[in-house]
Structures are given as structure tokens and as C-alpha cells.
Length: 512
Image (tube, rainbow, N blue to C red; front, side, top):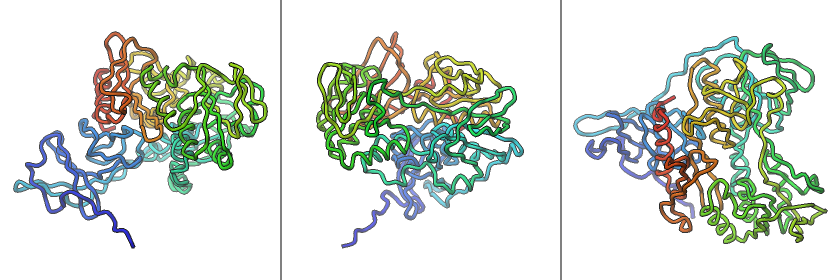
């Protein structure tokens, strides 16, 4: 028996709704034909846009209105209410907008709006992006989106085009995400946008003054502006046996595919390290019904980032799903398929995943003489110490207006947003980077959102119940909130980010 397609709910907005239903700062979900549409009254204006985020289909009705923008409740993407543009990652594609009319006490949503093409600029200039990860891709996409008409080359040492890396340790590794979810864009997108993507390409040297690159094959390329987005690489275990084929790190699509291949016949896996990657991999392997053991030196998983309460919750959640922990311990050697523990025990396993952290790829920047301070030093415009050379993502250490300190973080969304801001500045659109750092981590069916940045704190305030999966956890120093973690409190997570940005004197509702 064929199943009926789900019809969009709510009122038919093309037929009109009473204006009194939509008070200031209110949203109403309805439909126009088969399209679900969000009707918004904000700042004395009316807007109509697609009801779902273009990233992972988050419901924008549950999001937060900030100025003439709306923020997605799931992963904090920002959309311009007037144009639909995805002005802050992780969403990269716009939402559709509709024209709206108010008359005789009713509001009518009319035809879809077409947005004018941007003015072309920069013809004749050559921009190069080194790196094929989050920051590099987001920069290339933003350059073309905003009308840069010059040459763009992306030089990546990966064998795959840019991918949705968070998926590699989450749904794709678990087997619940299809292959076509993984690429950030199809292969034809690069040709259509005239982006010269060179894969498996090493950059051997950067001449910052002469604005020239030397590639691994000895060829040279001149540039006008350059973005360094070389990312980070997994830390490898300095122990005997760590280089065997069944011992994996997880960073690239090739890494993920190798783990999936090994998982097909594996009965038991050992995950070395209780990092985000390690624990997400553990959850994904449990979804494949593989016995999983986690070995880590910490007393509690992720306590350094989340504190003891969330650390205990995360351990209990994984144990509930069958993961066995060997904490306050480490691996001293891997002999064949046997892991020897420092405590004297041993574990046999068919598959091993190492998740003990990453280190930024700084060699190219260091050899070029760029200023380095636990990362590549950049200003608020993402520009390095060398004019015309920018850095973004895992390698960038920037002046964070929220904490008042220079920080470097290794979050996917931060890397994308920094790439976007770097692109605008490469085009001469002076745009400071100032959004609150954000990441999410998925453990089985439990998402943990984290906004802000706290390397240390003196107080943890908990609103709600961590063990009941309903909480907001605030990390404070001297009474000031530095970061907020939350479970199923999406609106409060969004409000925390906006509050941090406002406190730092930024304009969170600006539309890019």
C-alpha cells in the first residue's frame, strides 16, 4: 500500500492570515502551495522564508530572531530575513524568501522572491586557498557568492574534495548517512563556479614578500591574496605497533572509509583516547553492533572541556549503550591485535581507532616567517603578519572579543565562519570576526551544544538535570559566563551566544 506524502501544515499563507495573529517578534508556520513557510514580524517589518535550515533541516520556528536575522536552533546557522542568505555557517545555501503584503487587517504571502546577482569585483586578481577543509571551502564559496570575479585556486593535499567532516565521526561512520551527504558540494560545482580545485597537491614553500608559492613538484604560482587554511592533523601514538593497518586515526574521508571497511568484519574495537572524535567513533561503532572498549588517561571523559558533571553523564550514556571504559590508563604497545595497557592488562581487538587530539599544521607558515603564537597570529580581520595573507580555521589564533584573549579553537563551525570572514576581507570588505565560538557533539541520540570558550573556570552553574538530558551548564570565571553547554535547551543556547556577542560590543543581528 502506497504511503501518502505528508502535506505541509498550518494555514495557507497565500490566502491570508489575520494580522493580529502575528505580534512583534512573533513567528507563524504555514504553507504556500507545498512549501512550508515561516512568517515573521520583526522590527516593524514582515518577512516570509523557508521553514527549515538548509544545513540539517533544523526547524527555524524554534530558532531565535536577532535583528533582521534568524538563527537555527540546532547548529546556530544565521539567515538574513530579507534575502534568505546563509550569512553564518554551518549552513551555506540560502533559504527561499517570499514577498509579503499586509492589507485590510490580513497578511498575505505572495510570490517567491528572486535575489539580484551581486556586483562583480576583482576581475584579473588571483586568490589562492591552501587547504580543502572547512575554512578553505567556506572561503571559496563566499568569494563567489559575493561576486569575486577573479581567479580562485584551492590547493588541497587530500585525495577527496571538501567533505562534511563532522559526519565522518557521526552518522556516516555509524552507517546511517548516505554517501551523498558527505561532499560539501558535487564535483560539478567547482567547475560551474570556476574554482580550480587541485587535490593531492603539496605546497612546499611560501614566499610571503614575493607572493609566490612553490609546489611539491617544483612548480611556482603567483598570487595577489592568499588564505592559509591548512587545518590540523591527528596526533599519532609514539608507541610500538601504532603504524599497523588495523590502527586508524580519523580525519579524512579515506580514514573513515578504512574504519568502515575494518568494521565489516570486526567483533571488538579499542578506541584509544576519550576525545570528541574518540567517543563519537565509539558511538558509531556501537551502532554497528561492535563491542567497544575506550582507553584514556582521564578520570572522566571530556572533563577538561565539560567539567565533572557532564563528564559523568557522558560516561554513563556510553556505558548504557555497552561501551566499556578503561580510564586512568593508557596504551603502552600494540602487538598484532593485542593492546597492552600501562596498568598491566591487555585487550584483544580487530579494529583500533586513535583519538588523542590533533595538532595544527604550522610548518608552511613558520618557514615563511609569519608571526606564530601557538598558532598563526591573525588580527580581527583574519590577516596574518604578512599583508595580503590570511589564515583561518584550526591554525588561526585570533583576538577573541568575548574572552578578551587570543584563542585558537578546533571547531568546524568556527573554521567555516573564519573562512567566510577571511574571504570578505580578501575582497576589501572590512569585516571583523567576532561570532561566539560554537560546536556540537553527538552521542547516540543526545546532542550537546557548546557556545563560548572556557579553558578554565572557577564555577559551574547547572540549570536543570544533566542525567535527565535537560540542562544548561554555565562555566564562569569571576562571575562572568565564559561558555555554555546544553542538552535539549536549544533556545537558551542561542540566547547565550547572542548575550556573549552583545557583551563584547558586537552587533549580533547584522546581516553580513
